[in-house]
Length: 156
Image (tube, rainbow, N blue to C red):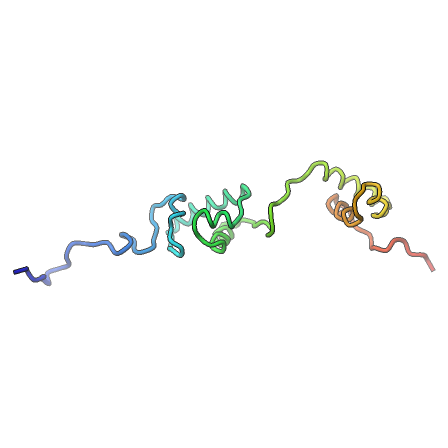
């Protein structure tokens, strides 16, 4: 006959489901292991720090939040939250950020100078083969100030 359990004390120590730290807790993992993390799983502070550092690095290299989220199998919202917690300044939505074009910067400075000396946006647009709206954007990019629209008013 089998022996009955005694009330002398608990049996051998058993880890809870999911390991010694409990279900869903990731301990001592690497950033690469984060990709295998279950959605919604809790992370230790060290894990979150390592993940945040890697996300910040990759985001700084131009990867999108969608790419980062897909890479680690989590939501874009979670990636966004982690980046904001680290003080990362997020890029505007809607695509890649243009790198400054030296030719455009030079043109912007020249257009802003000519506009500042009194030339009209329409005349500058005709000379450069672009729209007046593009000229206004170039004036702003070149550090100039736009005049009110409508040209010169006749004095009464």
